[in-house]
Length: 128
Image (cartoon, rainbow, N blue to C red; front, side):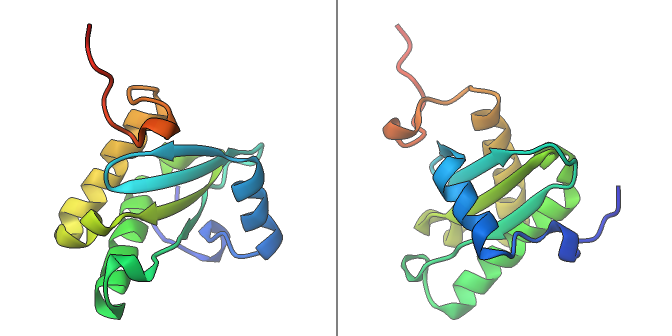
């Protein structure tokens, strides 16, 4: 697998983004909100949506770069899916390397079902 983050790995078409938001699964974690849509082809595609709640332009761009870097280094985690990542305001407080690691860690947790449903905002289930 190529280590680059090229055009084929970017979720760019409006109709593709709309499809992910309409038909994709919503997964919530403390630092990220994920929208994922499984697909047949193996090439993973990513879109990072960083709103103004995240901070100024410098902070938003830093977070987006860190998320793309985490994706680029761990594309196998996202195989066979289109993913939209929406960082939460707490993500801007982390250093870029740490943010990339947390992205993959939290995505694996929600993908493997170790976290609660989306309506509980990614908080761990209370153990009985």
